[in-house]
Length: 228
Length: 252
View 1 (cartoon, one colour):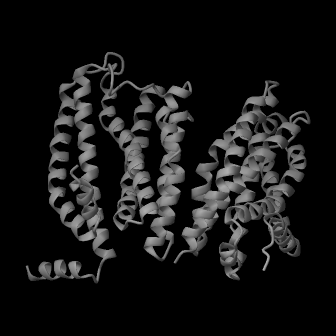
View 2: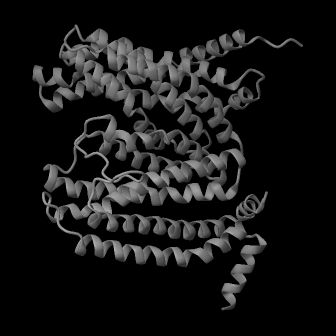
View 3: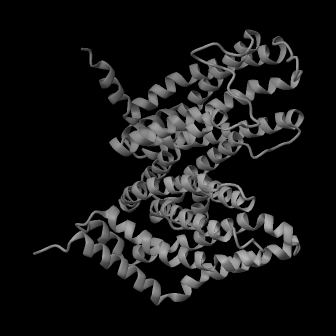
């Protein structure tokens, strides 16, 4: 019997998750709609003053994207736990961490990427200057994978519990603080015409570190949560 | 080489032995906590001179600083015993880690409350988004996350293992809290008390602070012992040694 290689296993995993996500397209649209509606509420609550909206736009968009991703995080492993395919994945000969990294990638592609795509629209709704939008997109491209990776570890930890929604928020939000600070710092610096490369570099460095460690931590957490 | 220390530690990790050990030490720890607390509070609130700049308001440090130290110390204890619990699967280490979390959360809460009470007259604000204050707040949320995750599982040992893992992930925050005043220019003052060098504090004010530190340490020990005893009893209920204790209690 010849075992499929690691690369083809990764490809199969990614393909399976993306296909499943595509079959449930409305689930992909939900976080996007959520982000649009939350952003729309801010001008109503604070008044449609251009200067005020411009000043808060970067932070509002970052927090909105964070919350929208939190909504979708719960579903990362839930269907796989229900039908038992996650147990099969744990038993598979391929390293669990690599398989989970593929699942996280698929999740990022289906939840974070649509949010990043509509970010210019959100920015325009809050009158963010067009020159800042590339920096905002760069900050989001670096910070959303961080959230997916942190989130995956915590979702794996709560895999054995029933009510995990609020608990997940309680655990994830403190861990997101550094990512949020650096991303917001970069946007604020760009808005004031200051160099913004330092916080972006910090974000990139954190992402590289997390990219290596989080799938391993996720595998350990999943083994703890499923071991009963 | 004498190997009685590892042997003794090994024996101590069995629930009945630790139950008796904790029961024997708890009154002493509690008594020492009360004595040192009384000395420290009397020294700090009555004997120590008023600060030349802050007047009497500075006296809140005799509560605030020991609580802040404990908030980090207990997290470190929790992290180490969580590591032991995950690696060697020692039941007692799980109990110590999980029962430390509420005590640590309480100390963190006291730190934040006393800090903001002091901040109002001194800084003119209850709260500011300064690095140390924010990281201490994150510490509180980490404690609450650990407690919440532990409670969310139906199986207690599984919950303890999952929460232990979260505690280990969150331990990265402890050095951030500790060094935040050195790394960033913050409103919160830098460290004044230095264990290995010259402290920038008059001895009249320092000794009550050290007495309060000892008091909080002993209080933690006493509280942890009582919590661990209770938890061990409910976890091991049905085992012989618990039945014997229950029988001797009902005989009285």
